[in-house]
Every structure is written in C-alpha cells, then in structure tokens.
Amino acid sequence: MSFLSTPTRPVPVSTPEGHAVVPRRGSSTLGITTVILALLLVGLLLFHTAVPDIAGVGLVLDTAIPWFGLLVLPLGVLALISRRRRAWLAVLAPIAAWALLFGPSIVPLSWGAVPPSTAEGTSLTVASQNIEATSGTGAQSATALAATGADVIALEEMTSTDFDTISATLASAYPYSYGVGTVGLWSKYPVLNAQPLNLGLGWNRALAADLQTPQGLVSIYVIHAASARPGDVSARDSMLSALATTLPRDENNRVIAVGDFNAASTDRAMAGIESQLTESNQSEGMFGSTWPTPLPLTRLDHLLQRGMTVTSNTTLRAGDSDHRAILTSMNL
Image (cartoon, rainbow, N blue to C red; front, side, top):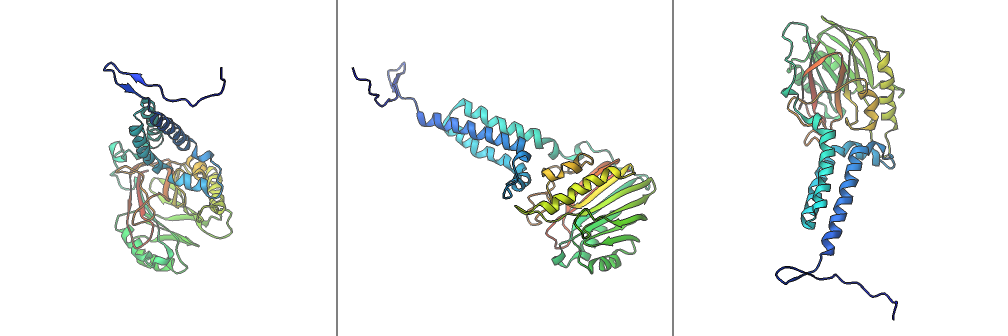
C-alpha cells in the first residue's frame, strides 16, 4: 500500500439528466475574495480615523472616504461573476456602512428646514470664501457675495493689499470691518472686540470678533487653516486643535466658526471642533464640496455654529478662486 499523496481532482457530480458537473473552484475563490474585500472596505469606512497617518495615508483616507462607497461597484461585478450568494450578501455590508455614515449628511436640508424668520433683525446670513491670493479677483468675489444679500462676509487667503481694496468695494453696504493677516470680516452689524487669533502658528491666519445683532452678540471666528499635504499636516492640526481649545472659553450663546479649514468634515483633525459646533446639511443635499472649483471633490470650507437654527446652506462660484464660496442663513 502506498502512502504517497496523489493530486486531488474535482469529483464529478451527476445531475438528474445524467450529465456530470464539476464544481467550479475558480468561482468559489472569487467569492471568498469578494467577501474579504467587502469586509476590508467596511473596516476602512468605519475606522478610517484609526489608520495611522504615515506618509499621508491617514490624510488621504479621511479626505476621500465618502468616495470609497464607489468601490461597491467593482465588488458587485466580482460578486456577479462569482455567482456566490455569500459574495452578494457581503457586498451589502459596505453599502449599509456607507449609508449609516453618510446617508444622514446628504439628505437635503430643504426637506425639513425651519422656515427663515421674516422679522427684521432675527436672521443672519454669512458668506465666506478663500479668494485664492494669486487669482487677483478678491474684489470680484466680495461683490458677488454682497449681491447674495449676506449680512456678513468672511474672506480668507487675502494678500497685503486685498483688505483695503475690498473694504473700499464694500464700504457702503458693510460699514463695519476688521482684517488681520490673511483673513478679513465685513459686516452690516457692528463688529466688537475684534482681535487676531494666533492659534499657535506665530502669524495671523485667524480672527475672533463679536457681531452686535439686534438679538444680541454672536461670536464669530474666521479661520484660514494652514495647508495640509500628505506627510505635512502638523501646522493645520495644531491650528484646529487650538481652535477647539478656544471655543469652550467663549461666553456667548451664539457662536460661528467659518472659513477655510483645509480639512474635510470626515478628517480626524475636525473632531474637536465638531464635538462643540455643528455643520448643517446642504439645502439641495449631497456633500457641498468646495474644492477645486472646476470639479469640487471635497469640502474644505465650512460654517459650523451653535445656538442658532440653520435655514439654508449652499455653495456658489465667486471670482476666479479655486474654492467655491459658502452661504449659510440662520435664525437667531
């Protein structure tokens, strides 16, 4: 008797008609592969912030994670080819995870928004844009944003001459203003207690002020966060962390943080701010991406608030900036 192993072969199975069918190993392997890939995708969707930010991997994941839902499409193709039920069931897992994470945030605000207050002085509309220093169209952006009827305009990435030029453009409609470094604020309401906000960088890319509205003071922080690139996020993270530390010390009930955060809503660096302030859904739904202007893929510009009720939240083009502007209206 020989104990040497011999290669195994698929065992033919007879059908009722008498035909022999050989089990398909390839489809079984493909089904298992689909299951594994689907589970990996679920893990990334649910725990992307736990992935170490080594060589920029964390930044890329945090920024692109909403688009990872598209990976369900090739998984569906694999499941179709494998003809395995378990593969199809596995594909449902990342669909459910994506819907759980992002479904609520893409529902149009207009479906359940509170109507805007019509009484004078009981609402506040804020417009904001990174005007792109090299675009040379800061005044055009300001004019376009003023045309929306905004009560407050916040601009970021200004050059040393932009503030005076824009102030001259907006003077008649926005008599109150304050600017420092790369950020500026123009308002129809008096601007009080305005001051630079260092946020640990040693140069001014943020400001803090109070808006004296008919309903009382509203704190506003205008932010131009440091750039974030794969492997180089420390300056941005420090600024956002410092802002998160500053917010609890604010004495006003109504608080706004607005500007270019250089971080998507899904970025781990936003967690400290998002635990204290909220950003409303877009009026027409979806993510409200603002960058880059020709084909926006991510939302780097935000308005987060507390103490007010958002009635509309949209984006628009203004000037020749590579960022779309944001426009948010709130009941005070």
